[in-house]
Image 1 (cartoon, one colour):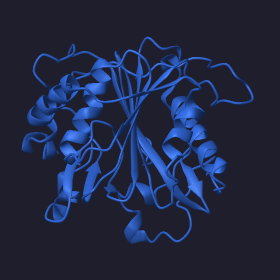
Image 2 (cartoon, one colour; image 1 turned 90 degrees about the vertical axis):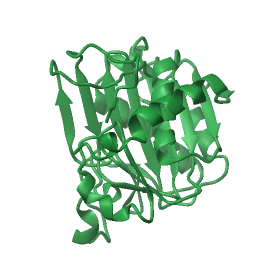
Image 3 (cartoon, helix red, strand yellow; image 1 turned 30 degrees about the vertical axis):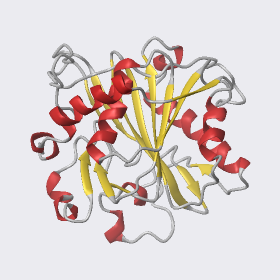
Image 4 (cartoon, one colour; image 1 turned 45 degrees about the vertical axis):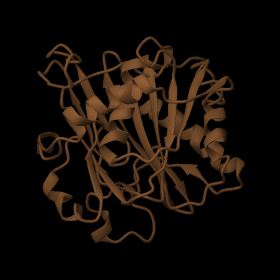
Length: 282
């Protein structure tokens, strides 16, 4: 999903990959003209551990606990602004104090239009299906292209992040596994299944008691990788975000979003995520 903010346009021949982490589609477009803004991504290291694939995924990690109330468009824009500016791996946690709905870059506006009167709608820059927000814990991870882990496949990165998430849940005494194969899961009706990410477990999603509780989607550019994920349908302890971050990296630095980044995010929201041309582009 991308409406190009002024001054951030990449080369029109940039290779972009959008991987649905919360739905069973993966789309790759290489060498194709794409009018999309891009930004740096999440960096990782210690990527050769054969037994424990999550400990030390990154050498250092900036952690943002964003408690501000923001529109869906601004939340998407903050993630992109972090992608533009992050120099080391970054994770941002945020919650929703009002009902919202996000849908993937390749999604159709007609499929979500009927929710507009009840929910704040946003087309994501990443792929995937429909995700309802309000009671979930949402996170974004940015990996700069300069980081060793960026050279791994999108699937590998996705799985390693979800291994860390699973370990954080298990540390709370929760039943949690990383799915080995795609599986609709138990108790999911055909009506719920169509287009709804959390009714569509795919390989490496996180399941608890047979149901999907965590999925994500990615955008990869030549400057980095953005993963946006949601954790829902399970009660989380207040310390869960910190535990998740610690599973990704032992050197965590807690940060606050500065005004310069927020100002940049507002520009992106105005030009892109908050514009009808972006929301209704498909």
